[in-house]
Image (cartoon, rainbow, N blue to C red; front, side):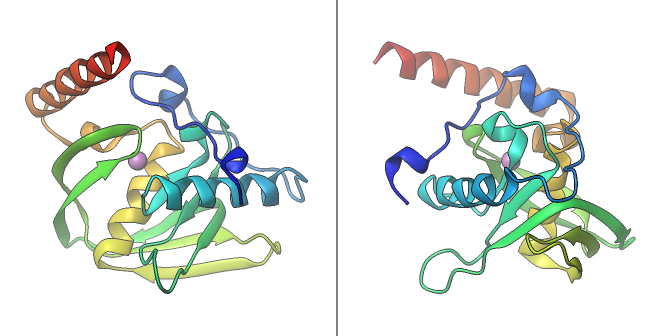
Length: 174
Ligand code: NI
């Protein structure tokens, strides 16, 4: 991986972050290379998850690794779906590479069951709790144009969006 393999990450309010992504077609030849570049981009950012719409590809493709560093455990999810969610909820702080430096406590189902296709075309299923559960839900939301701030009150969401707009404007001037 070189710098040339890194993809530019879109920031809010880019409208592509609000689009509904299309299913990946079986054996789409672009997917392995795109997934590899998304992983490189995510590790470099650094982040623990990245969805294809965040790099301008409106496809249902997500990469996740909640243990970057010494022991990477990359998960590449093609056409992922949540097929079960607990009634029990959990709250944890979330951020997003498309809303740099913004964080908020988000409440979601504590446990989810997710199904996806891996790069070899095999069907995968996994039940997740804790950080991985929140990460799966956050990344899958991106495929439907949903951002973590959409889970907050309008007041809190607007505060964060205004703060982000101000910070991004400040960066452009530097
Ligand atoms: Ni995100």
